[in-house]
Image (cartoon, rainbow, N blue to C red; front, side, top):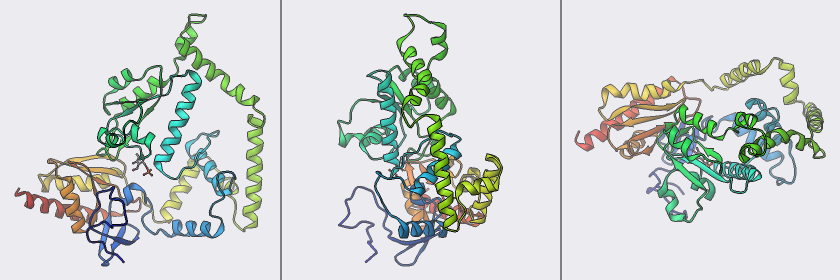
Length: 403
Ligand SMILES: Cc1ncc(COP(=O)(O)O)c(C=O)c1O
């Protein structure tokens, strides 16, 4: 059936600006269109396919699970859920952490909004407001849409409510002034991807943390009936939370430890029966603490072909190589492998289109910024090829521009 030369099909709602290519398969860092033409993928499905396309480990895991058990609803616990939740808690270093699994980023944000507002309401009824940053993107459900710092995206769906205040992404004072006793959360996309790959300054993160921290010291100094109510409420909450939890039958620390032991024992039995060591057994058999596990994890990633690449590798190749060769390039910005080529003119759309013509998939996230978001598997040859294809696209746009 493919291709659809316009990049769109009558059966699909035209909600996105689509490019005139129909991809039919992918392998590693490569995509192939319906005519068999190969493209280098530096978009990764908007930073989703971090192990590239059709990675055998991912494909095998998905196929094995699909053959074993697909869905039992959220009324039941399944073993993979528990293993993943425990691994997340261990990775984050939150031994008491609990996971909530969602199907998308927007749903994860929606759940986090609910948690924050529910928690705030327990302190006082009006504590349901959120401060978010201009330029942040948080998803397409109504809650995350309102948090998204782009008024043009709100306009068609108003009214969305008035519980969000937006402040500049780089102004700690503005953020500090916006956080008050009714603020239950500050929503930050630490590197604003859709907003142009703009890292939020550390001072803004610190201001968010300071603004939300319970004023414990003030509470300790001023005892008695005139102590500020919000401080008292927060201190009471902090002091009583653990005891309150212990009183709930079946939820105290002893019960949780027993549950964990039981889960591990069941899991070990199940895995040993299936002929594979259980995750918990493996963790102990491998020995060592977090650092040893990190080393083993890195070894596994390397053995599967994933390379550690730092940001300057991707961004530096793109920016450094062209700064000298094209007057259209102002520089690069970003963190890690998420980088933007920043242009001296608002021609990012034309550069992304010319790059696609040349065989490189990237996207324009601002009028003057082209995003580079490759899979973690890229190697030096991919980087060199990306730089050459981008150079071709920049030259093409310059010549069209008459520059
Ligand atoms: C920072 C951020 N948060 C949330 C989302 C929404 O994720 P999803 O598209 O999976 O709903 C995105 C998607 O691009 C994102 O970039």
